[in-house]
View 1 (tube, each protein chain N blue to C red):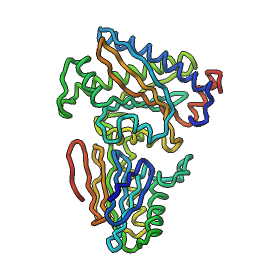
View 2 (cartoon, each protein chain N blue to C red; view 1 turned 30 degrees about the vertical axis):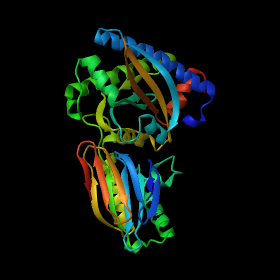
View 3 (cartoon, rainbow over the protein chains, first blue to last red; view 1 turned 180 degrees about the vertical axis):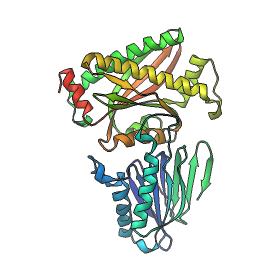
Length: 160
Length: 203
């Protein structure tokens, strides 16, 4: 069993007994896709909603609109089928409390919206989510059964 | 203009301002607390996002983060991050309070970290203003106490549309035998870096 680590604006795919982990999701989103027939799992750590608004968009995994389709392609390359894929997402929190600062407050929300739109466009069903609120999350996706553990400092561990 | 394109001379200029800002900050903190606090800046660096998280002890480590935005001719964002251990020491030095769990981080603790962020940012911006003749206006800091990856990621997101690098100033506070470490992240807006370097005569 290998644990694949995904950093900010990175992605990984795996199968069988492997897992994919991303540590410390704040307002970023961990998008997890799973094909249960082939036991193929994929995760991308999305940072921003839209690549078309960005001056620096060479890393496609940074954005929801390019990261989600690319993850699907990478999973298909190792044998997964888009038609069988289901999705679980986590993150999109608002980390900072009480402030008159502008955009930083809404970015989690915008990310959640953008990711859901992308999944819809790709025809992939969202079957579970742990999003929003104001705390950081560490998530791990298991290729064996598609389960996703969500861990936080304030609330401990749960499985979705 | 991006961080990764800076020349050694430009970097040195920014570092020097960092050092002078640290001196001012130490004086301001000492005045606030009415005890002698020294502050040094052992390291000033330009790092990619993923390494920024690593120097905080990994993305899951508990940290306090104070965040503020700077308006004016050269807008930027500033984040001050203190690891859990140093938060405890800070509370001991500043409030005389023992931190045993995350619940002990209350409103008073939040105010303290916010105030320290304010002082540090103010001191740094003052020295930057002196050298560049630019006017900076900082907002009231916002605060988070959680996983470092989540906090830093949230701030870098705003900046992520511009670059993958951040300007990092490591700060060490000394009160007698006690040493408290924090990291100060400066994230200039798209054209701000150029404006600052131009005023410093190293553009």
